[in-house]
Image (tube, rainbow, N blue to C red; front, side, top):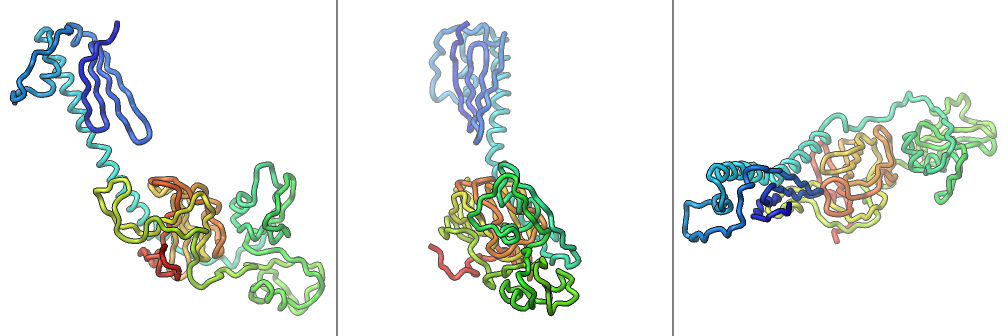
Length: 372
C-alpha cells in the first residue's frame, strides 16, 4: 500500500515523520544517523485524505499535536493517536537536550581524568635501577618490521639499535637480519686495540666510572683488543639544559590560556597547553625522562606522558601512533610518537603541555622563540 504522508516535525537532532500506517524517527548524530520505524496498524487506519479544516491562528487552545491530527477519524482512534504521538514527541524532546549536555560533561570528564593522571604518583619520575643486569638480546627481522617497532618492543631508543649494529640513519632493514639489542640504552663497542678507557669515555661523553661499573672491569687501566664493552647512554641525555620544541614546525594554532571551546563557541575554557600544527609528523621528547603513560586518554586521544627529574612532566596528545612503551627512558630529542587527529580534535596537530609539581606551566616560558 502506498504511504500517505501526513506531517514532519523537527526537534533538535530528531526528525519525526508521520505516515498513514507508521511513524519514522530519524536521529542525526555526529558520526552516525539512526532511523527507527514504528508500525501502526489501527490508530491511523481510519484516516481519510480530506483536507484539514482551516484553524484560526489566534486559537491558543490548539497544540501542534491537535492540529496535526485534526483529521477525519473515529474519536477513539483520534485520542489513541494523539496520546501515542504526544508521548513519542515528549520522549524525543527530552533526549534532544541530551547530546549538548553530554558533550559538556565529556569535556569536563576529560579534564578531570587528565589532571588526576598527571598529579598521580603513577606518572612521577623515578631513576633507572642501577642493579639492572645487562642483557644482550638477538632479534631476527621479519617482514613489515621497522626500527621504531623493534625499539618499542625492547624498550630502547632507535639510536641504541643503530649504534650497536653499526647501522646508518637511512639504512634499510632486510628481512632475516639478526640484530643485537641491549636491554638498556647505550651501544656495544668492540675495542680496536688495547688501551685506556679515557678516550672512549671522552668520545661518547660518558663518565669513566659508568663504563667501569657497567662492564665490571677488573683492570680499567688496560682493556684487551676485541673486548666488547657496553657504553651506557652513549649520547648526552639532554642536548640543552631546558626543553626543546617537540615538533619540526612551530606554528601554534591555539596558545596557553583562556579560549572559546572549539566545539561550542558559547563556552569558554582554560587551555593548559599549546596546540602546534603538525600534520602526522614525528614528535620528540622535549627533555630526558621516563615514559610513565602511553595509551588512550578520553578526548585527548592517543597520549604519551613523560616524567622528568625535578618534578617536571610533559604531555603529548591527539597522536596517531605511539612508538615508545610505558617505563622506557628516553633522551631529549628522541622520537616518541607521530602527531595526529585522535580524540576530540578539529584537525591534525599536537597538544603539548609542561607541568611542574602537578601544575601546568605556559610552555613559552621555556622557549626563546616567540609565537608566530
